[in-house]
Image (tube, rainbow, N blue to C red; front, side, top):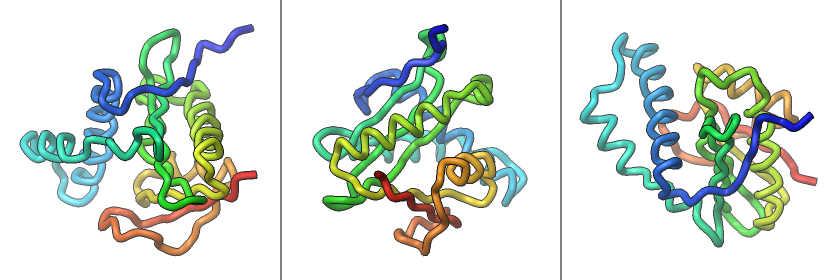
Length: 165
C-alpha cells in the first residue's frame, strides 16, 4: 500500500513554505504567550516576526527545506542548515495539528537527517522549548540526546544532538 505522505524539497520562499512558516510561528508563539502571559500573540508582532525570519538559511548550498504533503496537501515542514562543515541544525519542524499522529513527523525527521547527511553533516543539533513536549518526545524517540546549550536563542530551553551514521 502506498503512503499518503510525500516529503520533498521546497524553495524556502515559495507560497507553500510561507503558509507553513506562518502556521508554525503562530502556533509556537501563541503557545508561549498563553503559557507566560495568558494571551495570544499580538497580530502586529506576529507579522513582524514572520517577516523577519525569511528562512533564507534553508537555501542551497548550505541548507534545505522539506515539505510533507498528506494526500497532496501541504501538511508540514522540516529544514536543515549547516552550522559548520560537519554540523547540521534542524529548523522549522512542524506538522499541522490536524495531520498529527499520522506518521508525518517521523517521515520529515528521517528526510531532514538524510538531507543533512547529503549536505555533509555527521552530526545534527536542534533547540526547543519545555512547553513543546511533542517535539521533545519525537526527538528522544529518534535517538536525539540532550546536550549543553549551543546557541543563545533566548526562547530555547533544551538542546539536542544526534550523530548521523
